[in-house]
Image (cartoon, rainbow, N blue to C red; front, side):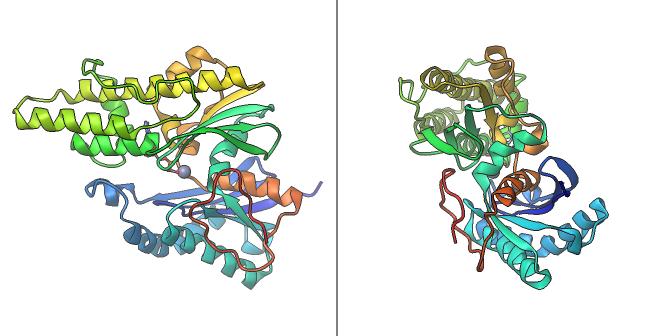
Length: 335
Ligand code: KG4
Ligand code: ZN
């Protein structure tokens, strides 16, 4: 079979990323320009700033990706771009860039669901066996997704309010650690002990999650200690918070794997880069697939993998692609 080269574009949040993927598996180029440093002192992403930075960066990232792969745009068989979910202004930059390239050079266009990308990041390092239970833990989502066959997604549990990554970011902000909070809490927690008492949220038999109550409990404790001039042991607080989050994520994953027949298990998305989560999930399920850190957080290579699956199915965008900021993992682009 002829080799298929996909150019993948990802701009759903604060990473401008372009990858070139051969036959859905081999990364020929992968450029990730993260805006995290710009937002580190602001405590989170400012959507309008993120869109403007994508505009500043996208042409540079595009040229660098082609140079890394030593290819010309005319060598590319299809352009796959994230069209949702995400920040609308950020998504529009990648979507419009893809629409323009597709029209100018007559290249096929594919719209990719970002959450499906997080799951299929796995294929850059593993062979997936189905059915698979996948726990997606990112900045905007916390979901248990049952993937019965290739590219068939069913949400079987999800957060009713905040996402796990969001709670990491908010608690880090309370502790004055910076953004993104996940890696900072992860590092700090490894030097602490779980000495602070925090509630385990949604500690029930459902497959759903809730992190806003935990966030409020953290906020109240930190506030009270500040008001009473009690010094907070940040490492112990980070460790206490992380222990509760990892406990509940694992509890629900285990429950889901008992309720559904599975041949494989995976944990994906930005929070799957967490060292404690990785360690404890591997103790329970040694074969559990978790992407390496660079493929856990937002990146274009994972978008290219889904792009390849859709290429093989002939699912191309016929007219202009538009951004859909609120789509669920179960949705695919339809003309
Ligand atoms: O998947 P992702 O890059 O973007 C979204 O699609 O949302 O996830 C970003 C989230 C952020 O909330 C960040 O704090 C969290 O992933 N994160 C981590 C770690 N690395 C990134 N959370 C916990 N531990 C980490 N090591
Ligand atoms: Zn993401």
